[in-house]
Length: 440
Image (cartoon, rainbow, N blue to C red):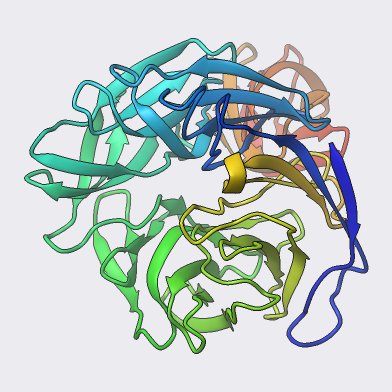
């Protein structure tokens, strides 16, 4: 593991906010084994992360699912066989409420157009769906899960199959929620905002809103001067605005960082220059516990940046090697220790951590279902940063519980509990629900 203490770069032309960051290469991939990790990591237990490689092991194999801890110890959980399981897995893995890892492969499978898969943490992988061919070319993007447990995805397509937003039914098969007209299609995965609706980027150069019922609205269309080729995912900051990137265009033709309100109020946040701030941001953004948004750029040597809700842009680190315009520079993830974790793809790729002084994130409760029931009722609690939970209480009475992901806990209403709020405690703090559970 290589540890580098780095003074950060530019902050809107002024001295940077963070006095020092620490960039660690946790693992460097080589072409002999799995390599090119075009993924956003997912944390499955405190300090343990999963991701995928786009290629390997070897020069012809189809990619792999890997596990790595915060000290850099890496093992391979599964090697994709290409023919039936798919090849070139990419994007963010989803750890769903059932504890399984869900993702997409961009090629291979029965239709040679990619697959939707599920794996347990031991690497036992099941193909849920193979995208059809050969009259179509499909570009699947990452999956998300809503608080009611439904998994949604998007894919672009050229051919007879229209580009779509879909949901998975109980058998893991995609069901169309919205079919894009010809000439349009998703340019990344969905995100669900605080209003409950979905938002995403359209390949026609716009931002769209989609309700759960499938009502589609374009809320903003780019002009080209403020960037073009929107790509990747959107992230919602603590000010309620959605942040994303255009891979190209803007004043300097190196891409742009933008934000938009849920009603379409647009703000150009930063035009990349191709200098110390990087350029060609080829993936989306991520929000962290501090309420700010983080992202990466793909122009060699690659950067990680931060933007706060006041619009202050900071280059956190310029990497000695890293992104490349020909490869993705995937989004970062804030771990339970407060550090940012990500991957690079150049020269086989690596997994890195970036300590920018963020505190370990405190747990949060978003909602729970059902809202009432007698002792013995199983309650699903959706939230954030709940890994490592040490207790769950119903109005102060301790309950049995199980943590299935960083976003979900199952708990059983204990005998003797009374009506009141639910609380979750982790080593980083305690979260209390804003509403009460009613004990019947």
